[in-house]
Image 1 (cartoon, rainbow, N blue to C red):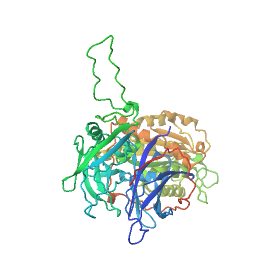
Image 2 (image 1 turned 60 degrees about the horizontal axis):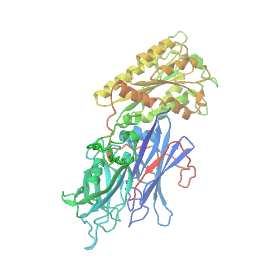
Image 3 (image 1 turned 90 degrees about the vertical axis):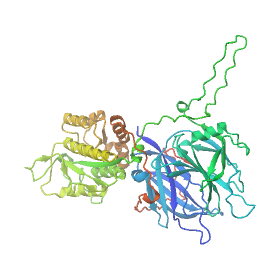
Image 4 (image 1 turned 180 degrees about the horizontal axis):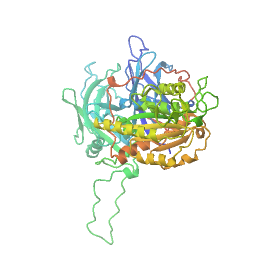
Length: 602
């Protein structure tokens, strides 16, 4: 089964074009779609509308399933909400999911053609269940300055603490505002634990109260720091939000450190938790004083299944995933091994496996290089790829067969296009002869030693890296025992070996690879010659192999996710044609991505 990981997308925009003229700003919202392949398009949903701003940070987030072998793209289109229903387009852009995850902090920025910058961030969905929450403000500080009888229009925000920096807070929820009221009663909401606290009920939360302003320049009233567990305790021991009862209230502090009012917790209950994760009631059941035959003690009423009163302990963390390691800064290094044996046929003759088509269409080797390499390249920060060949002679027929040689003048190719160029141009090397046998052990040894050395160097710096060797061959290996022995030798190295079989040869002798823990073998023909299908099949095992190496073999847990300040987020300069992705497109279809959105009102 493919490794499918639920992830969550959040977005914001800066310096959007002003579609409203000089005297006011737009009311932007965004529509999000996800595309898998060419035709599988699904609308994930839309954000909330934020009034009068050109720098929106939307609270609405979107959940979908990530699969390493699927090349997925996120389309973001931004609109200005108009009262007449004819919302005005403000721009749009397209992100590669792999590029977002492969960037520092899992964050990426892109400029829109018409102006403005869109920032996208992806993180793993963590934690199950929801928090039923209702708050009331009590005696809030009045920061309204528009008249003696005017009062603030309060709303509150909840932000979770960044895992990397204690002074960085990530907005997770925004309530509605209540007009002209210093004792506001906000609506009850179901908040997903994965969104507000990443599933950790003891994680710090920052609750901030503001006076809503139509200009978008909201005025701070006060803040406090709390946790989900503390909110539940405040509800249990609180006085129900009465103005004269101080029990269980949480005090707000203004920017000068002064008292800015209180928050009463009217509702704080966990719902939707899996039964095995439900925290136990911390209070033991009372023992009966003595047995009475005629009047037995009544049975205590059962606890509500979905609403445990209090949480005092953290829930057991789930097993880490590929996304956890990538989010913590683990880098992927990609190597290529290409079969230049004579069984591929004369590359000058049409129909042979190495034949280079004049129309630019890919032969089987190019399909494997591009289909698999273009996905993995997103996770390789420097995009520098060693390319090795095997099974050929140099210096004419009297030369010695080389089982590992560098393809091209440079030690590494600069990007996937350069890998393809090196592969194509190598046939013009003087005295180059396709020979035999098919021996991949030397390339495996070189790649494994390189992977081990790189990981040792990264570990000394407090980082980590994992390598993937993609071998493309037209036939079974000549020495199965030697190949098995090499897989045994590199079993505990930080590397996965992916072998793609091309052509019409019988690959039954390669089935032994199923017993090698860090190997994957896929026949291109079994994928119908599809680059997309080939990528899905070849990369299916990689996430679990990476986790197995670091967690089970080395005992290394993923580092905390890297957080990037806005000015540190990498820009993707690639230009994308968005033709056919307009808002009125009817191409939305159901998909296995199992998407959902989490939103709140402004």
